[in-house]
Length: 166
Image 1 (spheres, rainbow, N blue to C red):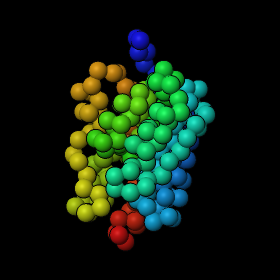
Image 2: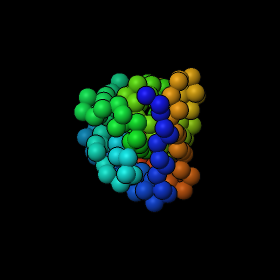
Image 3: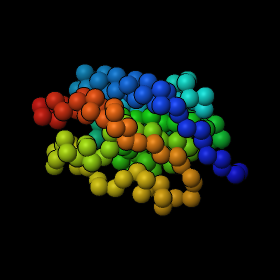
Image 4: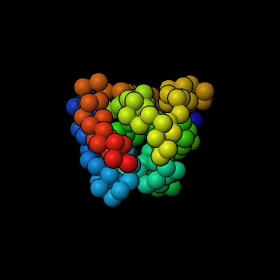
């Protein structure tokens, strides 16, 4: 099967979906979980097919979402979808997205911004391995969009108080 690059989201779609992912992250935080949120957006750029908040330090929002949707949609369909997430996916999540065959990753805030917030917090030992480097080692041309500079401060704000209190 020849892979065709998935369509990019418009700026309006990207902003709307990132703000919804942030609402998912806030719900996770209200349940005592780390404040990360992810969505799967269909090929039309509008339809949200799934959403997932963080569960724990192993079951991240992005990886959990990717595993779940890979069981419910064929790879050929997922290739045209976008996984939208509040923060840049870690190496584990990026690998899971890759193997789930989701064709586009869009994130709002960078891994570096997260590391600046969490430092050496034992609940979030950030790997310094950008998602673009993980994808570059693969054989599929995933599209990656992010960070989104004008939304990054709002997404970071969701985390600021959390990491200082935990």
